[in-house]
Amino acid sequence: MVGANCVGRARRVLDLATAWAADREQFGKPIGSFQGVSFKLADMRTELEAAELLMLRTPWKLDRGKATDAECSMAKLYASEMLGRVTDNAVQIFGGMGVVQDAPIERFWRDARIERIWDGTSEIHRHVIAQEMLRERA
Image (cartoon, rainbow, N blue to C red; front, side):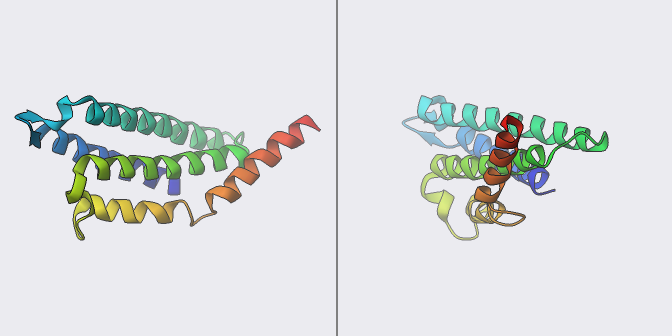
């Protein structure tokens, strides 16, 4: 559930950042036309798509009784870390407006931090993943 929530939030953040990059102008051009911004948008989209695929695969395996604890941990870990990176990039794209209190991006950015903590911290999920990998080699 946490991973799926992160994917949905990241999709909304990406939509907001893309709209801002298309509408906000600097030097007579939309800021999305500059590589520094457009490359961030491309990376955000790529990470979001990867997280979404992982979030679709894991419940599919769960329904068939084939998902391991490590696979569930990977889905939550990647999705929550991805949301953090996506919201960080969105704040960069929005500039000063990205940290204005009560602005949508600031709220997503602040809320994204908790996703890496609750339902097991990222470090706990990394531990679960690594322990399964090591057990497989023993």
